[in-house]
Image (spheres, helix red, strand yellow):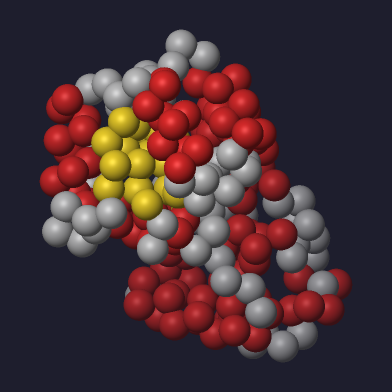
Length: 204
């Protein structure tokens, strides 16, 4: 497990993060100065960095320079008021996650676990919006990748690609959310994808 660096000047936020992870992770380093951050990254270049959006005046430029200098650091950018616009600007820079600073314990632990494996973690609403923006839907019948799916799975996959949540899909198809999840697992397996965004991109 990589070192987890908690980078913030806010005592309240630091306490929240510590309470969320203290019972699971002990390999935590607290950072409250720019000099301390750079020194810690020099010593631990392969780390998970929880970076408070208020730590630097121009966070976007600083994130860019951090990733250029420390390419193996996995940054979870923590924003007081996350927005799709800011997240979209930060993702191409190479951050591994974008989340609310006050993320609940269960979601923060999930994010850290995923980022530790060099994967990207985003809050569900952000992923939904990415899907909606990225997807240019084509006719299901013309997409040969979908030949392996049943008619119901094709309907469900199309709704996922349009950015609908499981709850809305269940209502539209008159099935339960549990059934939606079962179908999704089957679709992911058949199409060799692991998440909703990857599924949506098949429809591009």
